[in-house]
Image 1 (spheres, rainbow, N blue to C red):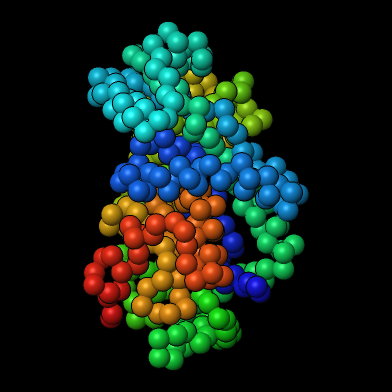
Image 2: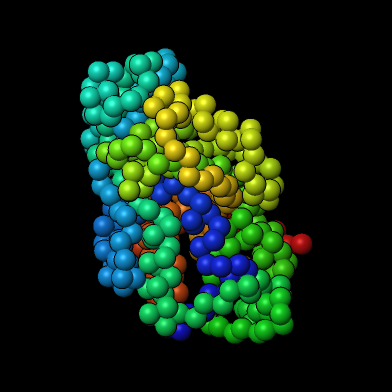
Length: 348
């Protein structure tokens, strides 16, 4: 098929490159069960997906399967880790309980306040900035047409089908099928069609440091984490702020991140600061993605992935392409149907 991507800015310039790249469906214990299964299935697709992108894109995507370490700094976090372990072990996943001394043996420089930990070999991570570069190169080599600075402003519709869309500069684009995958801006684009979808931006602030040595794997306590990025660089995050489309780095946000990661790893105070940034996660009312067809026959939705966009990339690609090429998907999609927020997608 011939594919054209219309992007309001530069491809991958928003949440896709702002994320930390953690592929952690086991340690996160996402709910409901059906969504957890979807996340774990997508994680299982990553080895093949990463290899395909590296071959087609001509560069490494920094995909690593070294596992993640979850640490408990207080009684509440210990209870959380115990719940994760019992729930996921009951589903057949392997999680290794660690004493405080075992945690310190695996990673030096962590807080003496650590009470216990979990090591999860099944949680992976990827350098999502490299992933996007490889993906864009692979798309271009496959003949995908990438149109940047092309925000969609108007839909031309006949009966229940879209015939064409108009971009901000007046350009007209026609296709047999359309996919709305505009992240936090999906609601704005859908509004041009007279449709409301409940997408809310959730700001996350991140920092990057250079350490004197490599970290062996992801380390996390509560909402704070350290993610290795190679060349002794480490990403640290994050915040969850509902402040509209204010994609800015704030002093309060950076203090929150620094306080959290320093409590987990006091060694951070000696690291060299590299940069800080913010991104907007596309959240929905139930924190689940919106996937599949709505009322319009030839319009699919692939949006609202919230904190799991990088993790769900390969399974989303599979589902959407199957719906277009085959007319159906073998994956259960009821949880993610666009019409679940009402009897139909609300009309303006």
